[in-house]
Each structure stands twice: as C-alpha cells, then as structure tokens.
Image 1: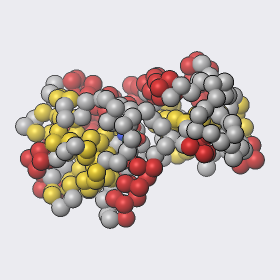
Image 2: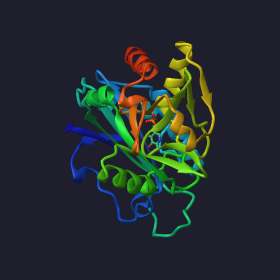
Image 3: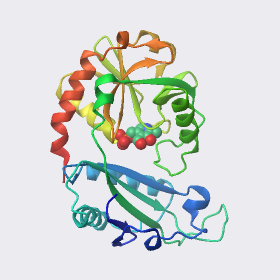
Length: 285
Ligand SMILES: Cc1ncc(COP(=O)(O)O)c(C=O)c1O
C-alpha cells in the first residue's frame, strides 16, 4: 500500500482517520457519486485527459458540482504519484461524491462534493493475456444510464459475483436480445476480419480502452463496425475479446459452454494486443 492519498484538495498520509466520511455522505447513502480508474505505467498517468473528459461528463450528467477545475485535479493527481515516489505499474482510483446532507432522495443544489484518490501497484495480467478468459451470458438488469461511470454498481456487483462464483471471469450482459458489454469491460466480436462492438450510447460505458482499441484498429487497417450484435450471432464468432483499463485487451476463449476459436487466442486479437503494448507508452503524462 502507498503512504499518501489525496483527500479533497490535500495530499495526506493514507490513514483512515485522515479521510473520515460522514454517515450523511450521499455516496455512502445512495451511491450518489462517480469515479475513474486510471492506469499508471512506470509511475506515469495513462490517457489522463480522456479519463478526465469522462469524469467531467459523468459529473455533468448527474449535476454534481465539480469540486475542482481540470487543471487543479491534473496537478493534484500528479502530485499524488510524486509524493508517493510511485515509479511502478499501477492504478489510480479517483472518486467524487455529491456531498453531505440529511438523508433525502432529493439533493440540495449547493452541496460541496467530496473526493479522494489513491494509487496502488498493479501487475500486468500476463496470464490472462496469454490464456484468455471465460464469460457467461447474463441478463442486463442495470439502469439505462450505463454511460455514466456512477458509483452505484449493484447490477455489476451481483452479476460479476455470480459469474465468478460459477468459474467465469465476467458476465456478458444482454438486453433485448442484444449483447451489450461485460460487468467491468467492453466486449468485441471478430467475424470475417471485422471487429464488431456496441456503439457508445446509454447501454454501455464508453471505455477509454475501447477508444484506444478503435484508434489502433484504424492504424492497423483492421475494419471496425460499431453496431448491435445479437446473442445468436455469438455462435458464429471467429474471435472475441474484452477491454478494460487495468486489463488492456483480454481474449475470450469461451462463452458459457461455447468455445471460441477452439479455445485459442485468435490472430487479430493477438495482433491488437501486441500493438496496444507498444503504443501504450505514447499516452503517458
Ligand atoms: C461496465 C464497464 N464497461 C466498460 C469498462 C471499460 O472501461 P475503461 O476501458 O475505461 O476501463 C468498465 C471499466 O471499469 C466498466 O466498468
């Protein structure tokens, strides 16, 4: 564990007594808040601007008053890694809750949002990259604003727990017969050399890794179609993979009992993985 954390506008020692939350914090009572997970490579923050774009979007959609300007939070997050003398690979977690008030669904307008951030080591998930993972189809019971990176993750919590208890890495959510995304990652299917993935709208989180993968696919001249994939189409998939900030690109080798590409890692997935590893160092600051 690292020694320092960001608590509101200050870097403090990472101890519970330095970061006390009231029982009337709306994040604690309603999950009324937003968050970001940012990857760190060699002690440097990865794709920081894209993560901050999404954070400000999430706050705006929920009418949470941003407790910092973009330049202030950038500077604070960098100060956090520097104060910790953090030079390894890791993850930064940043959370903003709407603030405190006597419990009431209806939020007051002028609350002061509360935020914190921590950094921790995170090893490259090499085994997952090389062996792939299994996913299991589950009905998507989440709310209809999955584009907001909200703290309120009960649908994901229940689905991921069930999936993992049954030996799968992720649930693969479907709603109205359409494959949406996984419990904490975006989903892709490759068919006849084309990458298919759900369009960014309210049914999925617009992943930062997704954005990079689509950019890298273009650089590699691999065609991409952002469109709705039906559950039936999965039977014809040549390759599948998922993406998330901590994991980068992870091949999917099985969906329930259906092996994908004979439980092998497909050629296009491998090519993207290798390219991603190379390009990742171009997004550091
Ligand atoms: C539901 C969901 N979809 C997709 C993602 C992937 O997003 P990103 O690539 O920004 O980590 C996440 C990441 O936590 C997620 O929770």
